[in-house]
Length: 343
Image 1 (cartoon, rainbow, N blue to C red):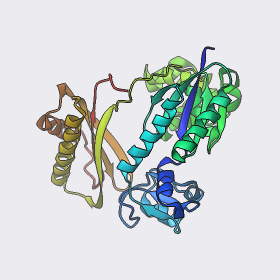
Image 2: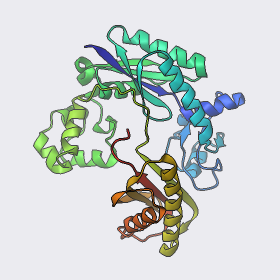
Image 3: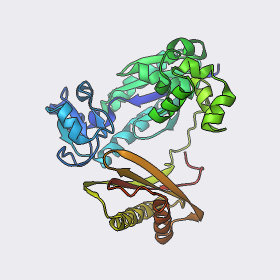
Image 4: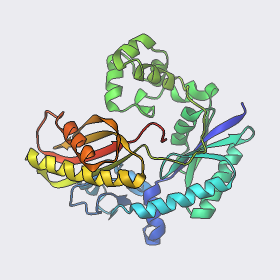
């Protein structure tokens, strides 16, 4: 092979940034989410490893997080601080001269020439640590699928390699839900087909899986289970695929006229973000979370790309009209999606 694909993932990134800002929090359970008040509604954005051992994880309601880890320090999200820290990390990565594809705040793919990928991984980890004081884990693979899954075995602060040769031995016995992109709902549907492990999905009858999940998702599931994927790493600047706003209400909203008002308010904020991005939106998606935690989404495609707040607001209302369940609402979100040109 001409090169290796490395997946660099910052360990407990948001919590680590907060511990750097507040050295007295190192070694303590730290939970970041919402406005930092666990008495209010909100969800965990991230938790330090010290909090995770108590069962605190991303997406967990803050009220449950404090019951699981009553001694934890709760902090509000500070996006500006994480943006700045992420920029330092990605700058450090690019300084090493590798082709680097930024995936978000805390992760990136890196293309490393054939040779000793473990040595390159350790070099990357050391340079990030020296430049930012942040720890990272690195997964090594022959493609993006390998590298991304290898990182889960590398954490925390380690290096792990997955290849076509070792994929079946390492991943085959794992539950199908261990594959990235396979959530609980998909895992349940696979179980209905008698598929419980990655190996069973890899050996599954492709037409049967396609019949259950569709002609695109079905084959993708089987190919992923076989460890097949792209080895492309692009050095093009990271461009978000979408912009979104959401809010969690301290009291459930039962009046759907008010729900419509809140959707319009969020849509106006998203429209301002779209205009600042200087890229027109092509689709608007509304997310609704009913009490207690059932979440669903509906989207509305736009007749033509636009940044017009009125059009975006109307599209959000049309997406909202597709919801037939008018139970009380605890969370609303509006997302504007851009053209496929952005990664």
